[in-house]
Amino acid sequence: MSGLDLRPRVVRSALGEWADDLDDQAALDRYAAAAWSVIAEPGDGVAGAIVGALGRVEALRLVTHDGLLSGVGDPQTLARAQERWRPRIDAGAVSAALRTARANGVHLLVPGDPLWPSAVDDLGVHSPLTLWVRGDPARLGSDRPAVAIVGARAATAYGEHVAIDLGAGLVARGVAVVSGGAYGIDGAAHRAVLRAGGVTMALLAGGADRAYPAGHAGMLGDIAATGVVISEVPCGTAPTRWRFLQRNRLIAALSAATVVVEAGWRSGSLNTAGHASALGRPLGAVPGPVTSAASAGCHRLLREYDAVCVTGVDDVADLIGALPADSPSERASPGESSVDSDSRRVRDALSSRTPRSVTAIARHTGLAEADVAGRLGMLELEGRARRVLDGWLRGG
Image 1: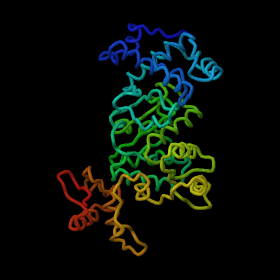
Image 2: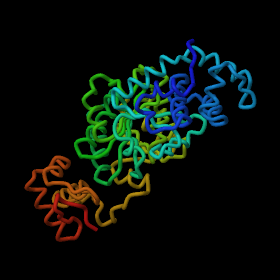
Image 3: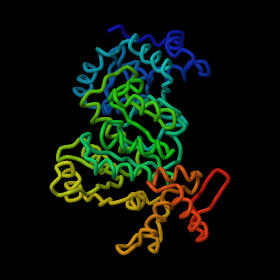
Image 4: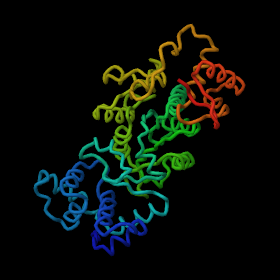
């Protein structure tokens, strides 16, 4: 253990240009936040409790110098925690984390920052002590509602199709999509949002600079360019099984609702659903064939955990309660004609805030551009779509 030197000169050197606009105390506080992300594993409730009680800097001083942490918890629990943290109290590791983050364009967010997502504070002592963000942190701290779409890595074609429909449909309603960057349902949802020009957030179990899985390096780069890639652990950290489970609590906390598209009986997605339920966030599940093992977990959520049955984006809109629901006359009925159905698809692809071109709408709906243009003309006459300089918006 090399220990930590908390003198201003040393702290400023480790922070580099990040310290330029900070006074000594603010620089020390930011350094302490980075140090805690190196020392403690995500979701460490003991670390959360002592930082909450003493502040980042004072808690770090005591832990670094084997100080007594009396009065902030059970003595035996604190002693075991200090034993757990002691091997990681390494100035070199903290400096390396900060240096690697700066080199990779990864930002350090800490509680109290203007762009800190306050929704994660609902996790209490298990709230993150820091967030490492690749991309523009302003997208994380915006007022845009967000919905988590999660599910099995070994997804079926049916599951991926539903994830794509939900992701694109939420973009049309101005909603961000949160997921875990994995293969299967996660990847399908992320890509649908990217294709639709929306904002998506990928929560990683390893460092924000590490593409995991490696096959999603390009997708994660695209997400960072238009949304955010987020991690609780420092850059360079490898993902592990327990970090995936801890990552899931952040997916749930950042989202106004969680929707599980496909999940096996013991899927990790059920862990995310459990966190959402514990936080009091709405929970939805997509039903599948009763013969499909890939949907067994979703059926379990519907049966045992009071999850809402989700069959389309309108059900998700009802879950978060922040979107204008379509009037009953606009909802599809069993006898709806294909023309009416196509008009509904076109209108669902429209945003009330972001203009969309005929080409973008055609790509989203799967209709020919000529058919989209015709439906838009009819919707305009009905007052349900309106033409603007850069494309089309949803009408009243």
